[in-house]
Image (cartoon, rainbow, N blue to C red; front, side, top):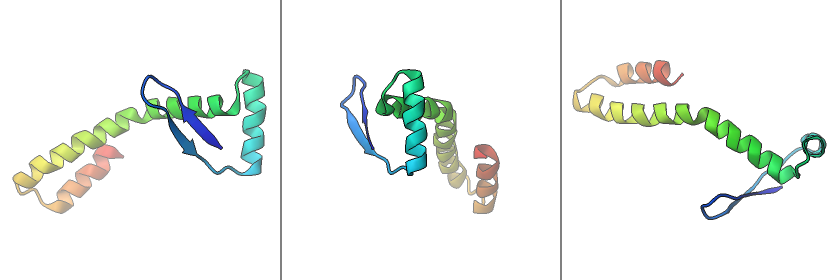
Length: 88
């Protein structure tokens, strides 16, 4: 399945391999929701990425924090422990 991404930016296509069972479920849901499968999958992906965006922000913040900690000679084990707890 190729999923076009239609926003104000340039469109990008994504190819996804699905099992026959998952494809059948998507087909059924698409009919119920009055969408085509590509629209449905694109919407699901967009919603999930929006939900996970705070996680991405935490990672970006922690990457910067690690740079600062390295400048202050914080041991790697301490940074790893903090990262595990911070990013969960």
